[in-house]
Image (tube, rainbow, N blue to C red):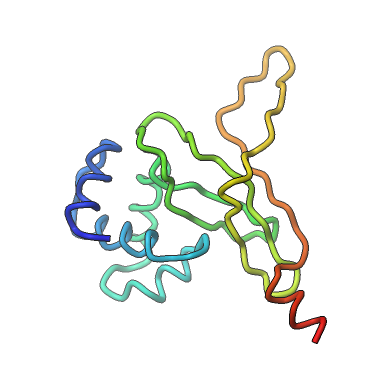
Length: 142
């Protein structure tokens, strides 16, 4: 992701484009899968863990990053492709492989609509499907 794209994306989401935030955004954009804070820390050597976490928290608050609880106790982050700072308009289902523990985005599969009972107000939703990914399935059938 180019610098000007990062600056534009941060600005669209109401986030001041600092050098640390640009580095974290570039790393999120480069990742093919949702990543943990520890994985980001291993790839971003120029920023300490608390600096990365602060950027991720700001990204989440401004709908620039999704936070995914993969069911294993690990929290993963992925870039939100929404262009709005006040809503997530690209929520989708995620898949957790029970063998390799990789989390995959199923971008074309929207989170199912849930009718809330009276008095409840949903803010966001996540949906994790577990099973075996194609790569692990292929390994098991060889």
